[in-house]
Length: 163
Figure: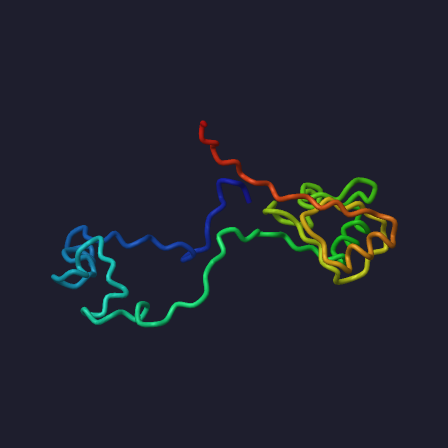
């Protein structure tokens, strides 16, 4: 088989229906929208409209709120850190930072910070530079001879007003 002989299996791809291209196409004239009225026109958004009746989303009570100042933290357990050290992806001699964890594949992407949680067992001495740790993690790290440095999250600076 050569590159020029590569092709999809028969029936794997299907041509899309071109709507509104004459009555001979099978989807001409009204283009499958029926006839007349608001829904046959373009730009219609009437999903929650109930004929003038108070819509359901407005009748139901609202609860809670979204904290706009909440930190979106990555959470990592001790077992996952030990797994990365054993696999040779995380260097135990260097400080464990968010960048190092992303590079090692422990975290998928950077967020507002990292919190280390206490599930699992840690056997290696580590120096953590993270946003937060649980109480048990702090005890475990210090018992092994490592140290924990807590970092403040990166704050986006607003433009200062001139005085």
